[in-house]
Image (cartoon, rainbow, N blue to C red; front, side):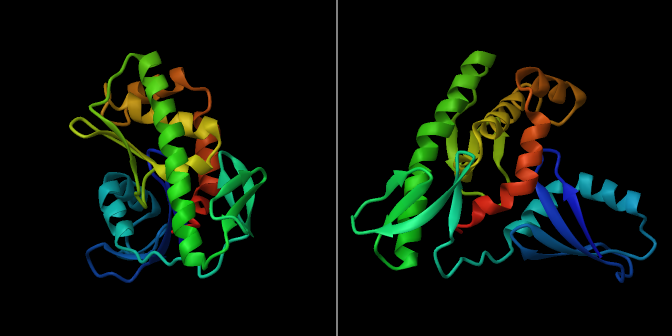
Length: 227
């Protein structure tokens, strides 16, 4: 049986469910966005959803242990700031961004991928961290620090000591999605939970909460094409 679970921050995980466990719930990683869960036959769907909601850190830890297969050949297209760009090779030695195309140096895909990841991470540092700083100033909130993350299981994280980290892959998402993630994490500074007061604050600072969650649900997995 297959189902999906939506984390409190909008991240989607696919679940392959089996009901043959005798007593304990057993989790195993399957892929970057899928876990296999074996539960006792008597566990109801509502009880399972409650268990998942109470064990999100365990789900994330399980996902992090999944193998991350990389594509062997250049993908036809990738997302960049909400627009699909086709990938092509050219004779020059640098990456050239010519919307709706990204031109890569003529080299094996492994080398092209390394260069493209580095290029996109650089754009993410310029764009995402700048947007985060702008929202922080507007909201009069000061994270302990800001940085990018290479996480496989979350779009952003906010901790009191280490500050806010944003997944560099968000450079592929539309600006309104990046803004939502920035505001979501900033709201965790006064509200380190997902209480009604937290969501009220998020929705007060962005009208795009539901649209951003929907976009990430539909296309978030495609932002990992370079892994």
